[in-house]
Image (cartoon, rainbow, N blue to C red):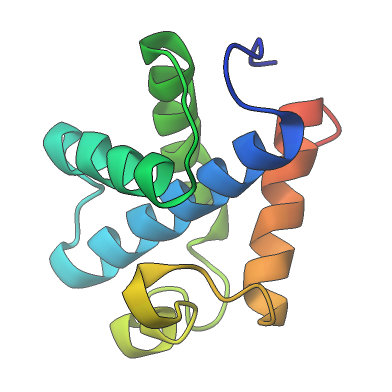
Length: 117
């Protein structure tokens, strides 16, 4: 369980979802998970785009957990295809929560954070 330090439960799950999908995009493109610098940049982009703040500990914990969640999702159809993954985003690389896939990943992230996974 990640101790809240700056994000509420919903924002924490949204950031984790964003990072998990970013991990999947990286894996589909390069065969590797996000490098640390790219993970940090993805976190900064999401925080700035959502007017949110999180301390370094929370960021590290969510970043680490994003790889675990992405690994759990790798066997699902389409999640290794860059074109399919690109459709999970809207303009400006914001997640499209109208997508059932995004909502499913968000639910998995929320469950993981609440300890229900």
